[in-house]
Length: 323
Ligand code: SF4
Image (cartoon, rainbow, N blue to C red; front, side):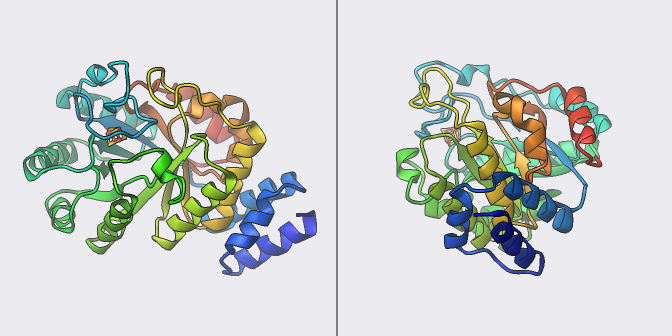
């Protein structure tokens, strides 16, 4: 699309219009990409302002996971034992959360492996959230798989958790190529149930698993349809030993275009760098001017390197954001 066409669509979105799939596809086809990024940034400024949110993620489960998510180092598919690297300790986690809060991190997520939890495991998670909630002044998020409506209701009623996370990972079309043991429809149901019981919904997926731009657009549209207002975008970290170990990272322009399209499709959402940000350091500042307005920092789950939070803060501030 040329400059004028992109601007026209952006202006319509500014007035409340929801972009169609065909329009998103046309935007993805190239043309004036600088205008696309610039317009995505304007949409972010209009609907979300300059507030930037940092969060950190802690993995609480140990042992190999029985699911077969091809990207995941904890999966039974991985030929390397990453699972033994997970060593959750509640007291140490609390100490670390207090440090992160002092740096400006506003929420933390506890994440459990597997498709879902049984009621005993949920009891344990509720206990963790309550101890952390008592000792730390920080927003709490949970990522505990495809919990049932009743389990979500318990989590809501018995803890201070405010946001429930469940990635849909990719489009419905491409999903069978990346996981065969968890039903994507159950993820959709979880996100809707989470909102019904009063949680904010957080979801997203992974860029670089071999999906097309059309798949990414379909994922963004699905997130909009599901009412997700916190979107996490990961770049595939191709762990050795996983089925995706040889997968190449998409080019910089493709990644930036993806971020911008997510902003066009979900103008009001918090759109977050999640895992894999270290792989795209070279375009990090460009991405912050193409629609991104949140980031995972510090601890970002198993085997992904922890980020240098002081450096992160400098970068976010240098791009005009308020933490
Ligand atoms: S992503 Fe979660 S459910 Fe899938 S294999 Fe990894 S730990 Fe298990």
